Image: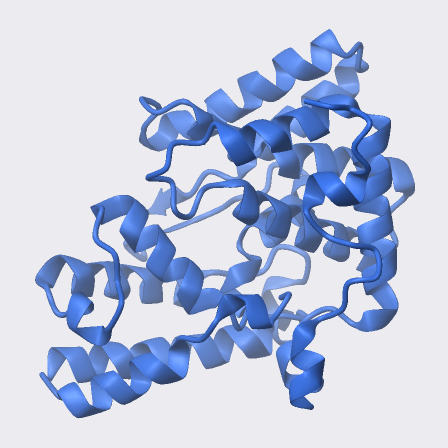
Length: 289
């Protein structure tokens, strides 16, 4: 990789880029991150990648080496997680050194998808190993390597028997920002786009209309996704004050929309399913968040 590339070029973004949805006159409803913070987020991302060239090298590998069947766990998802992790840490007033460490963790959190035969619960330990190897080779301090690797391990979804669902569990106050960044799509307008990409990655089936979701396996996936989001709790706010989280309103809307689609599919109401599917799908390039 050419290390003369700027951080902006590595990310595939521009420091002057703005959310294209502004032209639709509806920015208040489409934007999760205030414009006042966006330049700060992008600047920290760029500067950190410039300062630590191995991060740019990993992003380049995620762009060029991830298997083509990884329609969700790829460079695009990684960039979004870096972005939203940085947002959460900035919002909380964390120091520059903490935020830079979080950028490192976010860049590597799904690096295991570079290796096709890694499955299930092996992903997080493998991603942590890749981070450890590259950080060690770059001469990073041992304590920095440990907190980055531990945060990556915390992104694993643990099965909770009482609720019959899965959730992430923070092992430290540091990792909570990465966990909320990783699952930020739960509150995003791009949520359903990501959910469909993940289904394609799991099943090998491309979804172009509601008809592609009428099979039992697809329905089971949608139900499991709804349970996962419904049970999910943001880590950067108290469990009894979820409403204060910046993405909570979006998550509530996504839950309602997904429940409506599931209900229509279960009842065989094609007209309602088609209408709901169209409502939930759009060109994801029209919004940044």
